[in-house]
Amino acid sequence: MQKIIKFTVVLFFILILLVFYNSLNRGTNYSTDYLVGNKLTSISLKNFENNKTLTNNDLKKNSYTLINFWASWCAPCRIEHVNLMKLSKEENLKILGVNFKDKTINASKFLDDLGNPYDYLTKDTDGKQSISFGIYGIPESILINDELIVLKKFIGPINDQDLNVIKEIINSS
Image (cartoon, rainbow, N blue to C red; front, side):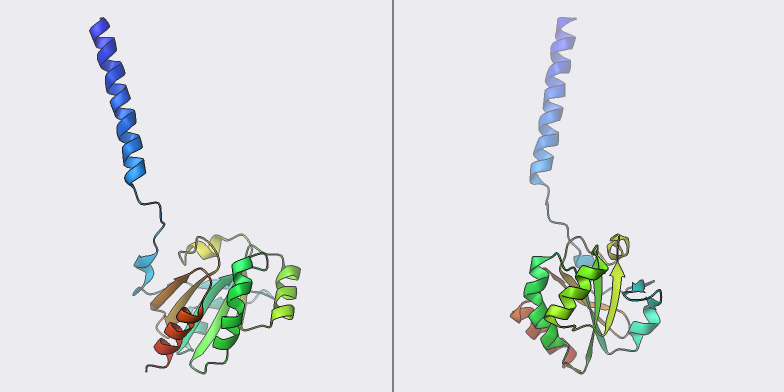
C-alpha cells in the first residue's frame, strides 16, 4: 500500500514539473501574423459622432486604408500622432481611426489639441469590435488595399521607419 502511495506522489510531482516545463517553453507573444495576406470581412464600425455604420463597401472605395486603433488615454498614441498627421497628406491613403475604449469628450479634446488625421472616425466603446481585427493592445494599425486584403500590421506606435514602409507600399502602384 505504501508503494502505491509513493508511486502516486512521485507521478503527481512529475506531472506538475511537466506542466511547468511546458509553460516556461511556450511562446508568450500573441501573434497576429496570420492576418497579413488575408481579407478582412464583415467590417461594421459605429461612426464616432452619430449612429451611422462604416462597412466593407465604404473602405473598398479607397486605394489604401490605414486602420488605426487609438485612445486619448494612450501615451504611445500621442507619440505616433505626428506621423499620422504626415500620412493624412498622402493622396493614395485614407485613414480610419477607431477610438478604443475611450470617452467621447476625451477623444474629441485629443483631436482638437493634436489635429485630426482621420478621413473616417469610428468608435469601439467596449473593445469587442477590435477583436475581429486581431487587436490586443493600442496603438495598432492595419494597412489594407481596396480589396480589403491586409498588407501590413503595425503593433505599437507608427514610427519613422513604419511611415516610410507605408509610403513605399501606397506609392508603388
